[in-house]
Image 1 (cartoon, rainbow, N blue to C red):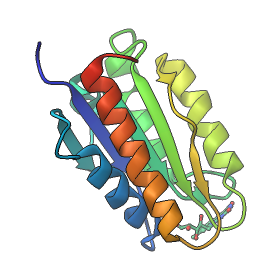
Image 2: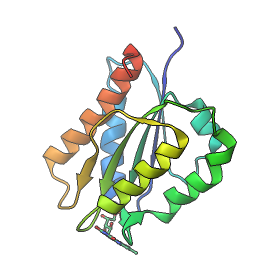
Image 3: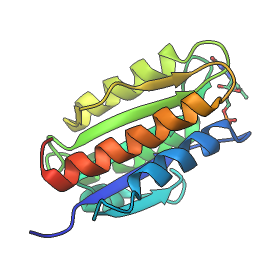
Length: 154
Ligand SMILES: Cc1cc2nc3c(=O)[nH]c(=O)nc-3n(C[C@H](O)[C@H](O)[C@H](O)COP(=O)(O)O)c2cc1C
């Protein structure tokens, strides 16, 4: 069976989501899990990355009650290129916001319904400080997605 591919796409302006993303990436690269992981920003990513992916984790701040403009731009640039070719791809979300985050979460979910992606993990929404517990949760998210892809359970 060919190695599975996990794509982690995150945007961060001031570092919070970068910290969460690093933890997700670390978890996904667990030594006992044998998959390929790509880790990038929405600016670097394009539709070929979606075509490569067997699973995706999106991370973003909330800006003005929505996902970051950079992540929205990524969706805008890729939707028609992959429409109908990525149905059912499992995904998960993490959000590091200031006080809310629900708008970012809802907006990603709405768009992912358009792509016909399948949400397979509870989202992580962080409005306070990034604690050790939060870091562990992010590592677990990465590890669970990676392990699930490797075993073919999604
Ligand atoms: C222009 C702008 C708009 C923002 N709007 C919201 C918002 O609507 N809701 C919220 O909870 N936080 C909002 N924030 C706060 C960010 O989501 C928060 O600082 C986040 O942790 C930044 O993540 P980062 O450090 O990865 O860039 C906003 C920040 C900026 C710069």
